[in-house]
Amino acid sequence: MRIPQFSRLAVALVAGASVLLAGCDSSSTTEAKTLSSIAVSPTTANLAIGGTQALTVTGSYSDNTTAAITSGVTYTSSASTVATASTAGVVTALSAGTATITASASGKSATSTITVAPAAPTLASIALTPATVSLLVAATQQLTVTGTYSDATTGALATGVTFASSAANVATVSSTGLVTALAAGTTTITATHTASTRTATRLITVTAPAATGSLVFSDAYDTGVSFANFGGATNAVTIDATTLYNGKKAIKAIITGSGGYSGGAFVSATPRNLSTFNALTFWAKSSVANATLKVGIGNNANTTVLNAESIGIPLTTTFTKYIIPMPNPAKATAMDGLFHFADGPLNYTVWFADVQYENLPVAQVAAPTAAGVAWPTLNVAVGAPQQMGAGPNTVNFTTPALPNGGKLSDVAWRWFTLTSSNPAVATVSVDGLVTGVSAGTATITATMNGLAVAASAPVTVTAPLPAPTTIAAAPTKAAVDVISLFTTAYTNRGVDTWRTSWSAGNSELVDPFTVAGRSIKKYSLFNFVGIEFGPGVPANNVDASTMTGIHVDVWSPNPAATLEIQLVNDATGTAAIGKYQAGQIATGSWVSLNIPLASFVGLTAKNKLQQMLFVAGGPSVLYIDNVYFYR
Image 1 (cartoon, rainbow, N blue to C red):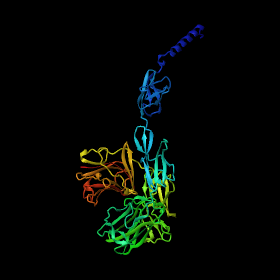
Image 2 (image 1 turned 90 degrees about the horizontal axis):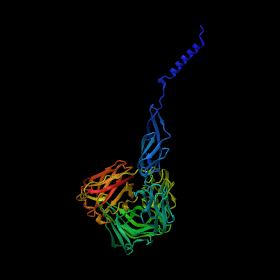
Image 3 (image 1 turned 60 degrees about the vertical axis):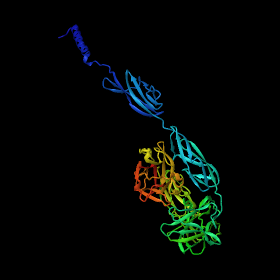
Image 4 (image 1 turned 90 degrees about the vertical axis):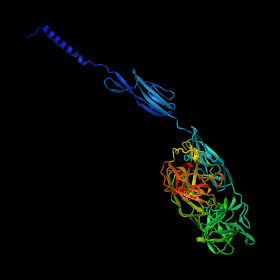
């Protein structure tokens, strides 16, 4: 059927209306999303002064979506002197403290807490100690560099410092600050801290000992010469006016026969320059024929830095001349230990006459023919010195004929010339002290009066040993119950020395060594260190009669297998030595030793204590603090 024209239009309109109504369905209407909150990242930050931190702002929306907000954000700081934030959200730290940075966007806000650390103290200056240095030719002096920081604290600078001498012909200085005097004059040692370029100087004055003559004894002691007992020796040494040599008096020494030994040194009050002589000579005889006496040079009863000995002198009952050659006369520029002897217990008497230094012709004293060294293998940490023992060193002569295989024994390192193959790794002093400078390997070699010494000492240098960063716990005992040698809690008694002269070659001391602003003492122990309070200054003697124990705090990065502590009491002229075995202490922490005095084996009295020793069973570094007697 044909539909009329108007009817088709009506149908179309009705259909269109239906479509329009369908397009207007309320269920398909979209609402715009809104910002619910914002967050700042990071929420906390720690900065150094001058440091920066970029903040990120993230928005959370009503449709549960998130997105970074990169515009329309403002930033404010609660402490603009501590930290500020740029319009881009970059925080800059200005001074120590805490600031809250608030980010705001579309009415929402969030915060980030910024903590600014105080600036690390900077090195303000450095100083060299000791304040004045006057040396005799061939002597040495260790310089210590101390830094003062911007916060007024101080500390020893063991690394990062270089040294230079303005006159190396007068005195040299090693990479660790050990000065060796070579010739009379003055030089300026300059220490430079590499990182900061801070410098310090010290004037070194070197003098040559006066050549006060070759004589030791002839009818009487030469001016300034006296006899000094060896420790623990039983001696009866006098000038004998009845037993004469060529009409002149002789020195009479009775060798004990009742145990122990006899021995001592004839010492000059002023070191002598004996480099123009090549031998010590003397006339001697014995009450009985004997071939056990040991004689030598370079030992002053305290130190043995120029020691050399002839063992087994063949004595007879008539005066005979004996010759002790000097290993290397050029090294004898500052000798005070002129002659020494030791033997016993054999119960005989020996006489010495016309003891003097001479320059004998080559027919009587020729150059040495050989030199022997028992080289050690050394493992050394940077900044931690280690001593090479000189006991096994020998020098052989064909002329003159010497006993004991034709050799001098126990020849000190100073008679040799020691050299390091790599001073940037390890240095060696004239007395055989090897110091690590940087990690690596080196070898130590020697010559003796022009002779090359066979073999060498291999040295391996490792990273620096750690040091304490905190101090030991403060003492708590009442002051009336304490006799203090070294604390900050009590009044300290006087101490003659914290490292005796007879400790040379057996230990080194850094004093003060600063930890957390407090000065303590650092020992490098190769064998032992002696501390004296009384022999030099009688008022320093310690009467511990009412005390029951001794306290000492110790810290070691490389403790020896054993640590022995000794106390020496000398009220009657006969020393009583007490020994306590502390064993091996813990590594890298403070150990408080509270030792009953009754635990010191052999300490029969405690009314006149004069010495304290730390004895290590192997090389180690030992820091000590808080040394006091208590009850």
